[in-house]
Amino acid sequence: MKILVLGLGNSLMSDDGFGVFAVRKLQQDFRFPEQVALLDGGTLGLDLLPRLEGVEKLLILDAINMDAAPGEIFRLEGEEVPRAFANKLSVHQMGVQDLLAVAELQGYCPPELVVWGVQPESIEMRIGLTEPVKPALEKVVQGVVDELTAWGAAPEAA
Figure 1 (cartoon, one colour):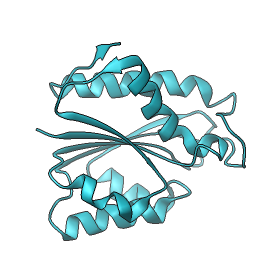
Figure 2 (tube, helix red, strand yellow):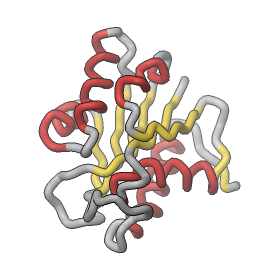
Figure 3 (tube, helix red, strand yellow):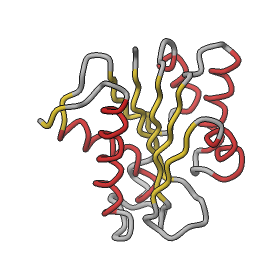
Figure 4 (cartoon, helix red, strand yellow):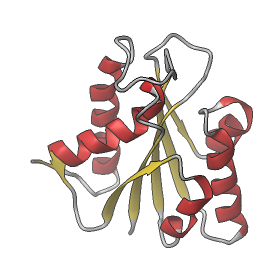
């Protein structure tokens, strides 16, 4: 079973970099089983398509505009994901929405898809997360660790 943890966002635009910061924290704090790959997908959109081939379980980490309080965490799965991306997801929503649609058309959209996201406060040009979003980083990292453990791919602390 191949699992991909994909962090999305632009780390130069404050909270938009949430997914990238989360993947970096996971890489720094944990060692992962062979079947788990972590990827800083940045804002690559359709360029990520080849990385989805053969993936059975996909975890996407991203800043998500759900019109909620800054720092609020969301976990979406299955059918919730395409619907959410169609309506109001990240600032790079078209890239992610297109990525998932094309992967499905080509027959290799992962059968299991989970998105962990946080409501951004700011996506202005600035390095680092805003104060309301910072605490969400640890919680999402723990959520990802728990998710991977439930999938039989538990990481070990580094």
